[in-house]
Length: 398
Image 1 (cartoon, rainbow, N blue to C red):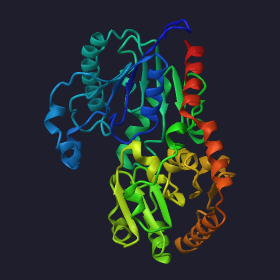
Image 2 (image 1 turned 90 degrees about the vertical axis):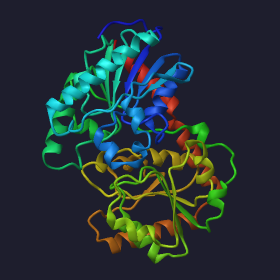
Image 3 (image 1 turned 180 degrees about the vertical axis):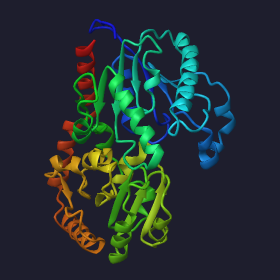
Image 4 (image 1 turned 60 degrees about the vertical axis):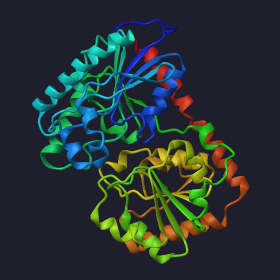
């Protein structure tokens, strides 16, 4: 870690866990605002393993491109994206295989940095297995931005290896940002310096546009209840199935990419009042939410979800719609604005009844004033504010 003048423009080498054009979230939001602040960013997209090519058609369609060495692509002023070539599988099952993969990634990045005149960058890490990269790039600062407990829902040897990998990263990084109070408490004592909390936020201006309802949404009958974001094993599909079955006059609209969806979710998706729109461009999300009566956060409570601070909560609020969630600990500080259905030990039938009651109350009590108050609250949680705080912390540590 080297000393910097606080007026210097920084170079950020961001090792991400998602592609630039994939699900738009905190990784892209933060890097975009750093670039707009005059800093330069090389956004390294997720490492695709051979196992991804075998399991996922979206990666197979571009399979040959992952085999070739790619050049960095400028996406806008001060920011470049770059896709590493494919890596061997097993990084979460073997420390040795992971070190080989990270060494190969570092070698590729070393050929890219001189092309962009990057010297002594801030090394910004998202993958929990990326500790071997620290010290490889003469970085002025190494940052681990932990957005979830990656090992939380894993089992067996994979859980053991991922826990060791993340603990190594926590202990080696100069600076650790986490998304939630729970993660800060969980990792206390594992880092060399105090952990900083940077909660989720929202692109306020984007979600508060005065937009019309998107045609895709307007053809769906009202009332529309929205579930937005990655649709994976965190979602309580049984709860959604029960809600949709009890109230066939309500229409549940799911917006997002299906990832490792359990087979048990199939009956839910077959219901006539369930509408799956797939992953939608970030640009049209405000017009889709414009047609929603309620935003739902129907997560199961697990060793992973109990530590997350869901981005969708802030995006729902910025759109002005009421929000109803399962009992996520990180949302309790927002309970004035988000209705949290408590009773995680209830059976599904009783939990469903409570959800249905809260949805009914939210729709019946809705007023223009309440929508405006939610929007105003969301304005206090902008990505611009979060990135300003990030830069303050970085300057204080360099």
